[in-house]
Amino acid sequence: MSINLEQLMQTQQALAKQVKCDDDFNASINYVGGTDVGFEDNGKITRAAIVILRYPTFEVVEYHIARVETGFPYIPGYLSFREYPALLAAWQQVTQKPDLLFVDGQGVAHPRRLGIASHLGLLLDMPTIGVAKKRLCGQYEILPKQAGNVTPLQDKQEQIGWVLCSKNNCNPLFISTGHRVSQDSALNWVNLCLRGYRLPEPTRWADAIASNKPLFKKFIYAE
Image (cartoon, rainbow, N blue to C red; front, side, top):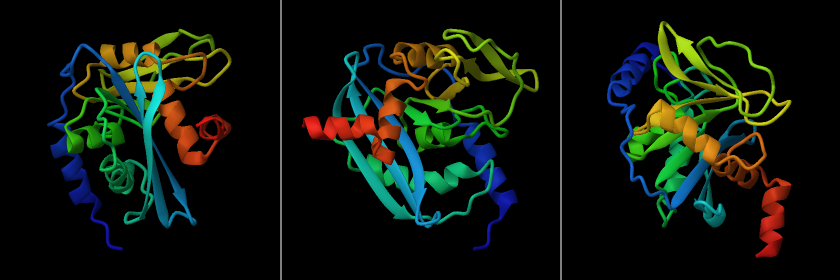
């Protein structure tokens, strides 16, 4: 497969200019969604999970898994091109669209300000929040691992997100605007969706569904 990184970089830069970093969503949130992406068969298959939860009870309304042939190689900084086809396939199955979509990955906390949360938000025209488990770029002040601690994530004199200790003695999360959500609202909504675990409920459920974890197995057996 021939990949023109210069062209992809220009595409990212052009799309990043379209990302809205201000709040542009309904103040009354009734449904929140979460996404998670993984790979199967040594990376040949991309697996995307989307879950819709009722807010504020976090009752599972629906969930979907899509598996598509992986059409883009693993290249750090360009992962959204690898992940979004499967996410779009899963999204097409959703009947109850969420008011906010939490995406497992970076939003604008990306060297070219276009992580998967921003890329997907643009493709869907959906308010999205990036919830990443690892830092991709930027600097921050190291925090004590105590739930509630938070500090800005900075890059080139610009705040690109937040570093949040969401649970005691756990590594922090990297929260950033995806699309149509401000940095402050992104942090606020992640905090509102925490229930004592490291991950907020939308991405915690999406991760459990994608990987068939005990949380999801218990839910299936209870249905």
